[in-house]
Length: 204
Image 1 (cartoon, rainbow, N blue to C red):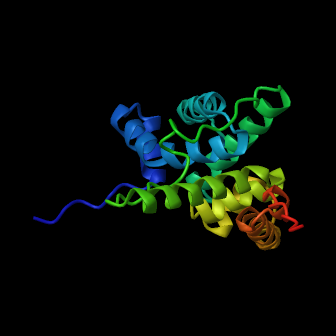
Image 2: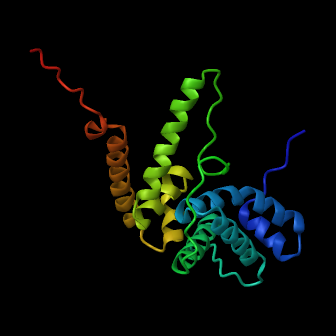
């Protein structure tokens, strides 16, 4: 038996407008993870990210949420709402919680499980270094990296979410990747100043 084709986001939205709760849950499960990770990386706060997700999907439930399919996809539109909400929270000073590296399951892609603790530790240190480097980027560069590289959003949707031309997305992403590479290289370089020098023993 052939399985039925999966409903598109737009079809789910139409059904949500008709009061279909299952359609809302399907859209929520499909888009919540990526939106949460975006808000988390941008704010550095799990509490802010949770508030943003709640507000994004409350917007979906409103009769006139402002979504126009001719301007782009629903996914890009939802990222745009999440971005505006994050910026609003940052302006209010709520983004003051350090991003957790232990308890948040959405922060980075899941690591492969190995039987070698040393490999796991090295892998984890690499993920943590990437997370720190992303958090250190200026906002306009951080958001394009999170959208295009971490969440694999296409340039058109990223442009819709950020409210800028695709060319701007490309140029910012190019610059952001260069900044990330530079930061990661700095983290990997040995800190000579931190290495104690052994005193030279004089033979009398």
